Amino acid sequence: MYLGLDLGTSGLKAVVIDNNGDVVATETEALDTQSPYPLWVEQEPESWWQALVAVLQRLSATLNVSEIRSIGLAGHMHGAVLLDADGQVLRSCILWNDGRSFAECGQLEAALPDFRERSGNIAMPGFTAPKLLWVAGHEPDIFRRTAKVLLPKDYLRYRLTGDFISEMSDAAGTLWLNPAKRDWDDALLNATGLNREHMPRLIEGSQIGGTLNREATEALNMAPIPVVGGAGDNAAGAIGVGVTEPGQGFISLGTSGVYFVVSEAHKAAPEQTVHAFCHCLPGRWHQMSVMLSAASSLDWWARLQGTDVAGLLKELDDSGQTETEVTFLPYLTGERTPHNDAYARAQFFGMSARTRRPDLTLAILEGVAFSIADGEAALREADAPLNDISLIGGGARSERWRQIIADVLQRPLHFRAGGEVGPGLGAARLARIGLAGDDVDSLKRHCPPPAIVQTHQPDHARAVYYRERLALYRDLYQRTSSLNHPK
Image (cartoon, rainbow, N blue to C red; front, side, top):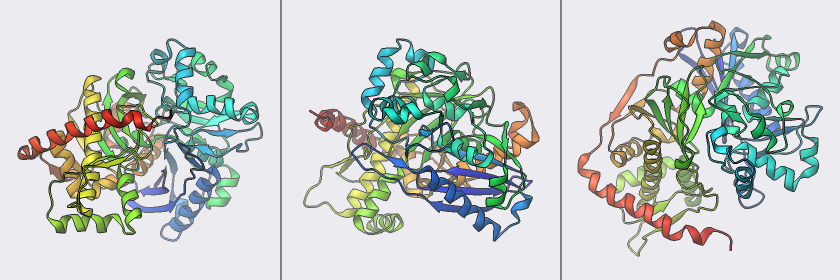
């Protein structure tokens, strides 16, 4: 058996596969985030380790964990875990959806004229490098004491193995990596007052990166097995749904919304706010558009209403409603593609005395789909190959939402079995690949696409309605965005 650990924003998920690659067990432990000030989003790294111990204890009740042969890691990207010279955490981890370092992004690009050429990406506050520049300016004592900077999943690796190791897909999201060269870039590091000594060693996601140390084997009741490089959550999700070849892609409806497409080479397009990162397999890269609040928009709405998402969707289905006059901008925590606007804010527009709750629920489903359409437009401008697209993530369990997205994009979309465990499954598959030691051309037998549950063909009769709604959605942001920026 092989274990995949997916460190998500809202929880840590464990996925176990057998020697045939079939999922035999899953467990999840919830996690909390803190937002002490506007634009701030943080988590405590210790809570990740406690969650890992908890899911392994529950797995031990249903299977023999001593039969697990290797571990793969996946996790939310861009987070900054700062360690001192003794390996102790210096402060809470600043997460991917934290927007405090917006000003530092401009400072980075001004300090290094070829910043985008080297990093392949525009500087955004979600990325790791501007976070460290913020720490240097606002918490100089912590910055001075920082000996290592780790990404979230790689902090778990450190706790498991004692090694400082990362892999290409996650490291590409720091803005310190040159994705074309698949190596740290000294000029990018120097721009934030760091050097290679502050960085973990780099490997490919399908390579072994450490072995469980004594502390971990005792805490988890496991043997000293290998830990594989793994991947950032989106690259791991791609492995989970068999997205390994150029032109293949997926749309993920998780906390954030991601449109991910594999490319045969590094294809940077920073002006389109498209991310250009390494894939977690050698010789592969990917392009990606990102919205910050996808399924989390619906979760937020359910919390405000004192109900759950399933209840809201059933209420919408029971209403028979297929159109709404209400438009929702899903910018609860700012936005990346295509706006790169940390100050963007969510809003409902077009309400009247006739508006009912199903109108607002439907507007949220449409608003997220419109943001995905913005991402697809940016990818097209970046010359991304968009051929075979699947849907994954917790939000993709909604058949209605899947069809809305297909209708907005006017393209067929595949919903595949097990898509909701995509990153965890991808991490487990990488654990298996790392032990097998296969070359990239034979990896596809370890990464088959899961069975198609349903293919959503676009309803061409809906095209005019959604085209008009999308135009209003885009115009609304342009007309109101300046109102959200500090005076």
